[in-house]
Image (cartoon, rainbow, N blue to C red; front, side, top):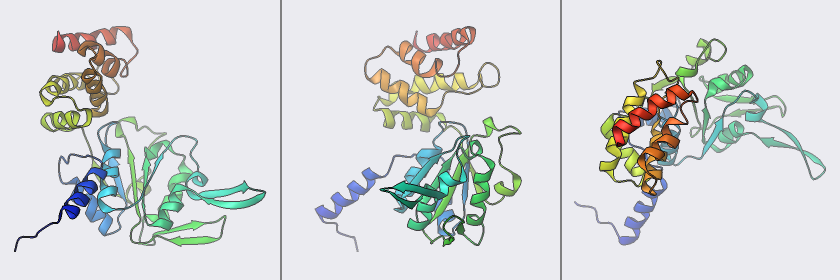
Length: 275
């Protein structure tokens, strides 16, 4: 029997879809994320900057209806920044949860972006949450929090930035299931750039072709390559009437390098694409 939806139900469905951040799957990553969430497995995402890791997590958190707490890791990030600390408020000393503790209490998803940038003591705090115990000991308060079923830990990093000083220890890596990300295939990337920028699809095709030419220079003239995020920025500028050459210069060439000779070589590729 065919289901019948009322106008109110149809409107609610459309609103729910609009609240989910756009993400175009390129493989089985959505089903894998859902399986990891369902079986309470911590997840590690690997891939270059701007390839969609953060958007993917936001998309999946919205699909699963879980609160998302995102932390951008850096050299000065401490374990206390994640778990919490005592602060002086109104003349009283009170405990304030950090984002990791908040996610555990609420049964949310905690996403640690570029985990290798954080100090080593941060990863140690994660260990009890990434095995069958799923606990978070808070030494300062004397609590031991048990993660509820809705809690999930997701971390990410860019393997291209890894070196001896900034890498995940094997003992940490093997606590996660891992997904590798890369830039989408050309056809999918055209669709993503068009959707995110509002720029006509046919005009996004040469932009993606240009990005592929620039990416071929990685390891030769460039340490990093044009990300999908930068392509969206470039398309937005073009949509607003900026000349394609100038838009590509400020959104693709200048963010990628500072060396004059290298930039000139990149601009030649832009000229070959847009004349």
